Image 1 (cartoon, rainbow, N blue to C red):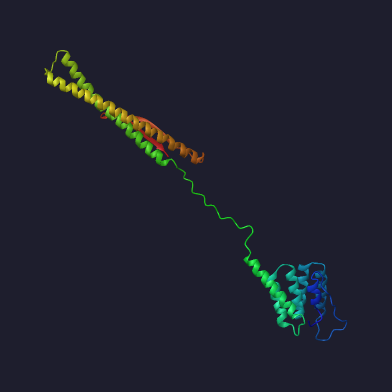
Image 2: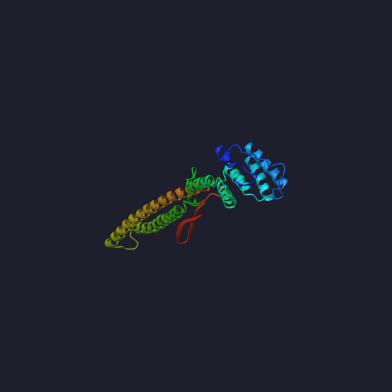
Amino acid sequence: MCGLLTLAPAITFAAPAKAKSSPPPEEEPASGPPERAVEAYRRGTELYNDAKFEEALEAFQEAATLYASPDFQFNIAKCYERLGKLEEAVRHYQTYLRTAEDSGDRAVVESTVEDLERRIEEEKNRPDPNPEPEPILEPELDENPGRKLVIAGGALLGVGVAVGLGGGLGFGIAVAGDNGKLGDVLNGNPERLTFAEADEIATRASRNQTLELVMIGAGGALAITGAALLAVGLSKNKKAKNAAGPAARLSVSPMWSRTGGGLTLQGSF
């Protein structure tokens, strides 16, 4: 390779940990490198031989800015190779090959470039040993998981209470009226009812009493089912909220009017 400032290729490739220093002659021709470039080269060579490749790279880059020499590109490439920056090393080796005239080590440098390019390609295709795990998408938490149960339970409870109270009171009043008439028949029969009429009243009273019991039973069953669903729903909501907010509240109060009675259901879910 031409020029005075270079890491001799024979030494650089045979023993890359050792860089050869070839200080320039005492007298430089007029076209030779300036003293600052020579000094930067010497400093870079010493740092390279001490395995301080980062500092050596800076020194050789300084020399290259002061004097355009292909040899400095070779030195810079060697530093990048030592630092593991293979793409930069290839780029500067290729610059050296383009600019060096009658380089005796061209075949060796070209082989080095091919080897580095192969290593770069292998590095790109190498699978990540620690791939980033796929994010786990957690389902959104329902703040009111028992809402449907609460609504269904409240509805059933209300219907059950209405059926039980309404049916029980309605048929119960009718039964009481018929029983009163039958009692009057036994106490003198003030309405002068015939035997057939009294028998019809007795049959009707018996039927209404059966319906009264059925309505009370059905209403009670609906109310019990509704209360159970309501309790489960409120329990689920309470667990989901984890005391983050006010707990669901429910209040039941009786309601009476001239036409009947019932329950008022109030709450927040």
